Image (cartoon, rainbow, N blue to C red; front, side, top):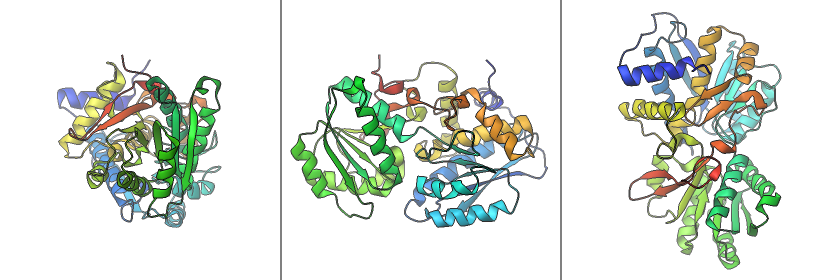
Length: 391
């Protein structure tokens, strides 16, 4: 199995401290559409910082065929209509690959413009499900496969009376549908959904829903939605005094959000996410080595390694790997085909295999369950891949 060039260069920098510098040539510009301001600006800013570290590292290790890489960040303020407006402007400038946006609603709004004809758009929201063979890819592990790992983990803990509180927007609806799909499987027949609650993202409190969940005697609770929506639910849980193991969307696995919610967080707080936070549980191998070295790069730049800075990392690195292989002026069709055929690529979220046609390359075995340790300010893996108990 060939080790991707990017992984090789990352190990070289981390171990030897030597690197080639990209020549003084015109940069290879990759636009990144993200919410740098607005209600989820913290997420876009964290993403921006992480990709800037990746950009610096790529340029210190030869750039893209000796041309420097440059990510150009464009603010959509978390608004789908602005994402579409920005994308339309980019389409007039002959870019072959674009990253973004971060929210599933924004990516869904953008997708019809490029899905069949390109350019390649690598959406940085895991909640998007692009058509197979299209010009659109989705970063990270989807809510559906996160639900698969979550249900399995809950079963291993004996938490069989389950409740879900999900927003009615795209993010919450995807997780809700994914959970119902898992509960319908024969292997999960022991699980009972005792409370099935939805709420509008505009609601300021979900106290009534929490009261019904308490009355139902749930042994575990899933809360899913965009960061601001999850924050509303967490405040209501705190106000109610509910002390039930609670797993929430990994959209808030960002230190700035966790700091804001400190004092309201459930005592038993869990997350399902990719392997980026799983150093303590990952076996020795390429993924763990890559993750350790990526954390070293982020820490050296004073960037906290969290979901915001790490989850877009693989998408950016995969695009760099493809452009290094094909050349910086490769057409969108070649970039799409190269990503779609990529396999045995050890990213920090997991080993990628795009040949399944899911346009993301990751599956449920790449999902780990984490518990937030508030006193240590860290996410600690409590499962291996797929929600399996640690051994």
